[in-house]
Amino acid sequence: MRAIVCTELGPLDTLVLEERDSPGPAEGQVVVDVRAAGVNFVDGLLCQGRYQIKPATPFVPGGEIAGEVSTVGPGVDGISVGDRVIAFTGFGGFAEQVTVPALSLIPMPDTIDFGQAATLIQSYCTMLFTLTRRTSLAPGEWVLVLGAGGGVGLAATDVATALGGRVIAAASSQGKLDAAMAMGAEATVDYEHEDLKTRAREISGGGVDVVIDAVGGRHSEAALRATRHLGRFCVIGFASGPIASIPLNQVLLNNRTVVGVDWGGWTFRDPFGNRALIDELMELVGSGSLHPTEPASYPLADAAAVMSGLIDRSIGGKAVLVP
Image (tube, rainbow, N blue to C red; front, top):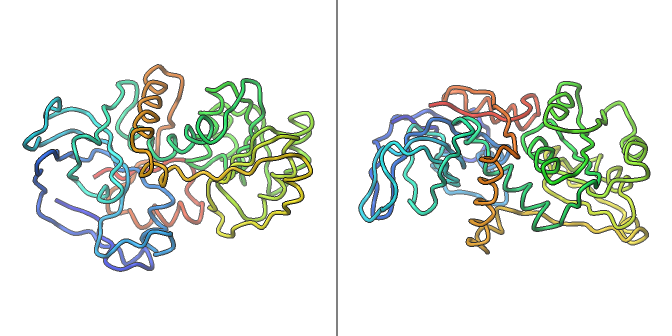
């Protein structure tokens, strides 16, 4: 079995492709043949040692996969060889096979393929958690999505639209804005060439109700100032690098709310709540209410290059490794 291995935290070009023994399932586990492994921004940060979690090396990166069950371990009921499944693994996904606790498997909806399924959980759970658990979105409310052409941004656009929101997509290139429009955005702002605050206010008729900020940096304050009275500013992450410093008087004067969103941390604190969230997500996908984008596919050996492309934003949208 081949797997991508991070032998030391640091430059991504130190990752190696290794041959390893095929795994065997212990009690309550199954082995899944990985058909697609989702590559996320956080995977590159973990390998570089730039994330708040510092895993012990060596380790196999890759947090979400889709595939087929190849071996069922003892004590497992209701799962058969050949079942198409999704799993949020945390680590170990960038490999041809992965061992997974049977209780954590998610049946794969028939409406999507392996690539879509492998890029579904992290970004879509984050956004469903944001817009239904951390805040609530009323039909007709305006949602400003920063970094709208990235994986989280596209999921934000899709989820917000499914909930009845009206999305303004903000991104740095026309290609990314076009992708967000195809996902359901109603209007766009090129924040490299347009004034984000002014344009968002103009489009929304005075200010947006919700901001989804997974970018951080220099655009955060402008997005906050584009938020109307009683608006909600959701902090998802800092893909651009810098963590923004915002004037808190802008929160006070308009009764705005700043909402922190850490879906990953919440899953450990409320695993039953997270399972309910995932079940809700699967229903929305299965019914066709959500439309996960088809990711770009790369061979397993390109893992380092793909992670680098997501970090420097030369790769937009979703990406998977196909072992």
